[in-house]
Length: 216
Image 1 (cartoon, rainbow, N blue to C red):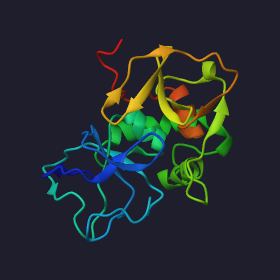
Image 2 (image 1 turned 180 degrees about the vertical axis):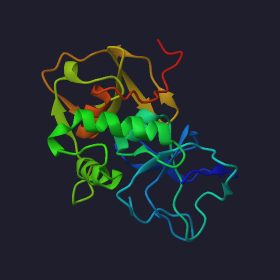
Image 3 (image 1 turned 180 degrees about the horizontal axis):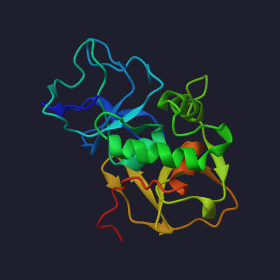
Image 4 (image 1 turned 60 degrees about the vertical axis):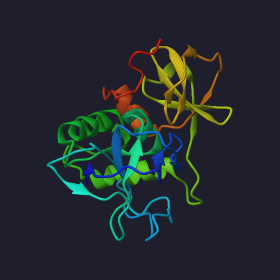
């Protein structure tokens, strides 16, 4: 559920493309929700509580609340939408209904093997994405693919670091933005961070917002 932020402190509430919840002074362009993850002292106690991991707008219907208040869901933040998708989140149906419907349609088109139609509940899709983002030991799920087969907006991992794939370039991710782009790697296979069914949704027409404006 989206909010308007009353105060932004340096808390452990930013998310990186590998799905980690980190502490940084960098600001975020999107709000996220995985349920209540923190305790009374604003300390993260668990990586998630719900299987519905959402991407929300920062402001919606003049709602206001204190970030990481006791007994409420934990507000998470992302540098851009591509980062949020890589971590395993998807658009919220309350504050981003049009984007959520576009994503659902692209997901269904890109993943016909599940036999879902447009009437399927989003919770069914959340269950599949959940299996693709985190394993039973709490580790990030990754897979290998040919880099030339990947659409823009996907994150890959190189030497343990996250890189955004866009416009035939790769860009190293940092909490404050992307570094200058480099040519695609000449590798037969590359490790992919973005969940597989989400990659298929990108390939089928959903283009995530990417914070690369003005970069060469």
